[in-house]
Amino acid sequence: MTPVTILTGFLGSGKTTLLKRILTEAHGMKIAVIENEFGEENIDNDILVHDNAEQIVQMSNGCICCTIRGDLVKALSDLNSQRDAGAIQFDRVVIETTGLANPGPVAQTFFIDDEVADTYRLDAIITLVDAKHAQQQLDQHEVVQRQVGFADRLFITKADLVTPEALDDLKHRLAHMNPRAPQQEVDFGQAELKQIFDLHGFNLNDKLDIDPEFLGADDHAHDQGHDHDHSHCDHDHDQCAHEGHDHGHAHVHHDDAIKSFVFRSEKAFDPAKLEDFLGSILQVYGERLLRYKGVLNMRGIDRRVVFQGVHQMMGSDVGAKWQPDETPNTKMVFIGAELPKDIILQGLERCLV
Picture: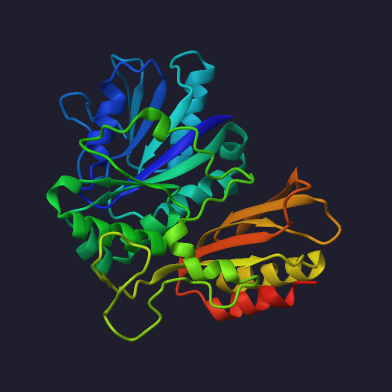
């Protein structure tokens, strides 16, 4: 299975700078970059010649760049066919989305299309965020919020152009939209490739790291879901002070369409009840659910049950055994657009034994 990384981010966030580095640096990897012709800036018109509907160019560092104007499925299929024929070589793929694109449909391609799913494995979605303009972009364009919500990792670019306080506010806002995506400052595309590849963001595994600030100090006293958006700011004013920060300033409260919340409990789920409830939630709210993931404590199973999904597509598997010195527990995170948080949290509570 060939791993695939989706690189997304709004106009001017630095995707092209990062891709140029991937395509020109002597890193020894054989990477196929699929660049969407409708992107705001092509990789480099001196490097690439756009004359066919689909142009595949061999780069000097062993990578290849494929420019498409149409169907992603066809582009992936053509790349694989040419590899099978010995015409090209690659062992991983990077797909650049346009700055105005919602990465959701691109991600779904790897689960819906059988031929693609047989050959390629979606590894992660990486979103680049322009520190200088992100607050305004997040306010004005819901697609930017979706790009953040879908991410497995957030690269913050142009951090040197803003004050430490402004950068902290942005990081705070991003964490409340997507608490499961680590944030990292990246200057001029200088991210290490190990921070881009093999993140296993779409694997069914026990790894569910949630930003500790998002969980909040008061959360650890809870053993059920209750009000778990942990925004710390469930009030109708514009600013609120936060404890546990060493920067000593108030964060602006943003009423973003894309929000996240967490459910935690040490009680076990009734498997049949949970399956029915999640099925009904996906049927009604699946289009609004961007990403969701959980490590579950299920009655009658001495192992973790792991699940995750994108929109209506959900997968689950049995993970590692609970250790003798740990209390079996559930932790679930939901990221979506205007989700009925109370309905979901209360419904999950009703599924507990």
